[in-house]
Length: 222
Image 1 (cartoon, helix red, strand yellow):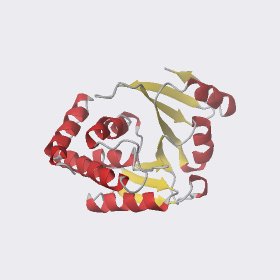
Image 2 (spheres, helix red, strand yellow):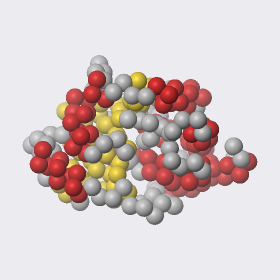
Image 3 (cartoon, one colour):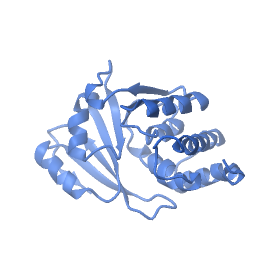
Image 4 (cartoon, helix red, strand yellow):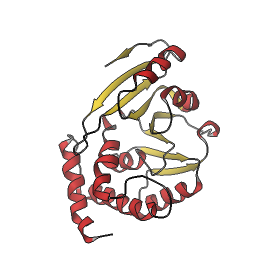
């Protein structure tokens, strides 16, 4: 890791999080920076992300994940198809009161996630090596979050057995997924809300789709 990614990395994280209106303390910034350093190191040997520069990862991975904070419900969150730990690890660091389960079907990714949780001493993080369709936890989740996992109708079909009755599913997307939302309304009839989010340092469009899988509410709104 180059020295230019030292304290400047934590400063970029802190300023970006604060620009989004969220409080962050030095320990959270340290852990988020440590996560990106480990991600850059492991990315050299296994395919975790197409982004290789930690400074670029700040906006694309850290801030993009943290943008979901206002829609996280309850105390238990499942990160579906966690991959590099996104959005679960940034959310766990920002919300130490939140119990975060990182679910992935690939063993090398789980190995990486376990290393991050251990080195950053994230007591509120647990990993599960399983396909989502086969995962049967003892307790269901208040919030499910997915980033680049699947089209929204497929996401809902794969995870409906994991969400509590009053829970919700968060799909982190780029452009507004209108075609997926139409398919969702036709096939599942669930309540959805689409929120456009602005990520400091990121020009690309980002949206968060909030899905509440209760058939009595079946309209889509902006």
